[in-house]
Image 1 (tube, rainbow, N blue to C red):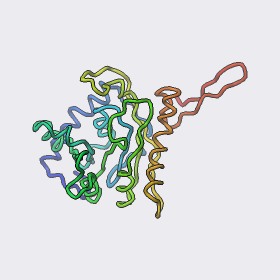
Image 2 (spheres, rainbow, N blue to C red):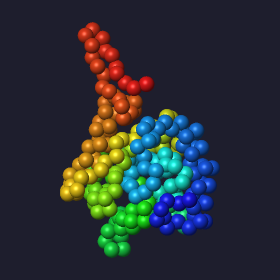
Image 3 (cartoon, helix red, strand yellow):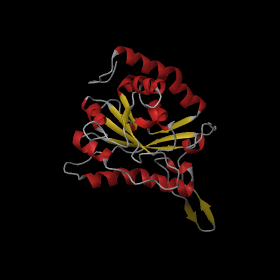
Amino acid sequence: MAGQGSRVGPGTWLLRQAFSWLFVRPVITLVLGLKVRHRERLPVDGPAVLVANHNSHLDTLVLMSLLPYSVLPSVRPVAAADYFLANPLVAWFSTRVIGILPVDRGRGGAAGDPLAGAADALSEGEIVLIFPEGTRSTSRTMAKFKHGVSLLALEKKVPVVPVFLTGLKKLRPKGSREIFPGPVGAHILEPIYFPEGTEVPDATRMIYDALNTVHMRVGQYGDEAAHPDWQPPVEAEGENATAAPA
């Protein structure tokens, strides 16, 4: 059954369940070899916001594969309208089966707010997926976050769960139509609950710091450093010993 408050009808609910059972979980888990760290930190119902670093169009499917089947009909990824709604068939699949919330990056929403649909989804008890960088990264540095996620979380008083994804940039790089095999990881960080009175810039900084801290570790030590329990190498006299989780 769909999550409490979900606007999804029975037909769409079945479509999304079938898509997850027959495609998302088998491909992401088995073919891509997804490894998940701290799955217990993920929300089991809404409202909530999941944020992640953005390297590939497969990022959304990976995030969807992490969540319980029972909530998939009420999972709403925020995505660019100019990309996903340009083709009628892709638009139908993206909105009905994946459940995207299209954002017009050039004009904003109908009321001038590009995330108005996401706010409505949270009010309905749904789980919103957002990539705060706004576009897929092509550099070694994490782009500056916009304040949209913070505005949503503070207004609706919902937690933000950061997820750091690894392996997807090499799997399907931006500008490529090919998929290259490789290990994929989803590292669930501690959920962020904002205290009453938190200002928007401070909330944005908290979200950015959570993901960027891991991003910088990965840049220096490799994908294994994305593990939430990873510890930096410990240099002993005359030798190097690396303290890392099994």
